[in-house]
Each structure stands twice: as C-alpha cells, then as structure tokens.
Amino acid sequence: MTAPPAPRPGEGPGAAAARLTGRPVTGERPVSAALTEVTLDDGHVVMVKHGEDPGTVRAEAAGLRWLAEAGTVGIPAVRGHDPHWLVTDRVPAGRPSTEAAARFGRDLAALHARGALAFGAPPPDGPADAYIGLAPMRNVPVPDWPSWYAEHRVLPYLRRAVDDGVLRRAEASVIERVCDRLPDLAGPAEPPARLHGDLWNGNVLWGADGQAWLIDPAAHGGHRETDLAMLQLFGCPHLDRVLDGYQEAAPLADGWTDRVSLHQLFPLLVHAVLFGRGYGVQALQAARAALAD
Image (cartoon, rainbow, N blue to C red):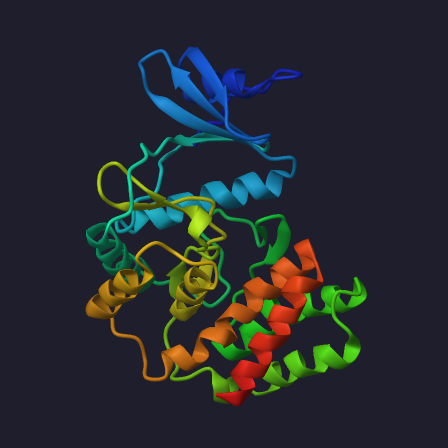
C-alpha cells in the first residue's frame, strides 16, 4: 500500500480529506469536535475523524476493513487514513424498521460466523494495543475464551476501577469470583467469532438503503454472545426482531439468556473506568447475576 502524502502543519479535516482521497474538497460541516462531514468535488460525501493517538486510528481502520471483508453487515468503506486522520464513506440516514432489524440480526450472525484466528486476535494489520471508546484494550490471542475473557477483558478494568476508587476491594472480590468460575459459567465452547466489539446502539446506523451499518468498531476475535449482550445493555430499536433474525440464522446455545450479564461485565467495567461509580455498581450487579444463574 502506498503511503499517503505527508500532512501539513495545522491541517484541518478538509485538507486531510483532500490529501487522503486525492480529490478537492467543496464543503465541510462539523458534526462533533472530532468528526467532520466533508463533500468532495465529485459530490461524494465522506466522514473525516481526527484521533490524537495513532493507535486509535490504525485500530479503527483495520477493524472496519476486517468487518467489511466479511461481506455481511453494512460497513462504511475506508477511503484513507494516516496516524491522525480517518476518512470513511458517509452512511445516508434512514429509519429503523422491523424488516431492517431482522435483516441486521441475520447479517450479524453471518459476520460472527466468518470467525477469527483466536480469542483476542486483532484484525489483520491492527495493533495489539487498541481501544474501546477512549479506554485502552489489549488484543492478545488466547486459545480458550474463559481464560482470555478473565485475563484480558475483565481483570484489567477491574484493577483500574479499584485503583481509581470506583469500586471497593470487597466489591471487586465478587467480580473476581466470576472470573474464577468462568469455565463453568461460560456455557458450551464455541469457536472465536468476528466481533464488532463495541456494539452499542450509537454504533449502529440505520441507512436509507434499509439495512443497518456499523461504525466505530473495537474489532477482535471473541465470543458472539458478547456483541449481543452489549446491544441489549444500551438498547436498540426493534431489539426483539434483531434477536429473532439472529436466532433464525444461527441459533444460540442453550442458556444464552442466563449469560447476558456475564458478557455485559466487560463493557460495564470499561464504562466504570471512563465514567465513574454508577457503572461500577451496575458491573457489581451483573457479576452477582452471573453467579446466581
């Protein structure tokens, strides 16, 4: 792959888009502090995202390409990136419908089925030191899901939550018991799935073409129930139809509903580290529910 031209000092999103796509820019519209909608001279509209840490941009670009390679769920094409800028296609907005939700469930099942080399495996060309939102997330391949989930997903964030005073030491022991019992709580063994990895409602866009599109991945090899648990944690339009579509395409193992709280433990701890004790309390509740099931 040919390296993009070097950025200029003080470069903005429009200049970055022109440099990375090779096309002049005719318009810009800020969406947020880090995201800008840019119109190219051919009428094509792209989203230009700025990242302070080069690892975040590299990880997101690699994740988008890996998910798109599966040819299942809609994924915006990556038009260019460098250590601080990511340019992707814009998704024309539509509205969620029961038909789109059922299709999303089927497409998500197909994405998961494309698999990964191992639990914790990063996307090809993706860094081991990646991110979920603003939190560091290390991708380390491990053969079995229970030990990987405990060591590389739950415990790092639990330790930080305790160090930051978000959770008390006695409370952390409840979550540690979940980790100790993971081989018994995890359900039937499954092969590593190709996960989006940060599948909350804000990262699901309902397109004008009648399908769901996924953005902002924290992609890696993991357990397919984790994506579904995160989708349930923060809500999703027509969630029952999403789950029905998924089950129609790739039925989940018996007892999967009892394991939802187990898989929600990771994103809740991430949110506890980023946003405080309220999420820490929810993580503690999820741990107790997992131990009770």
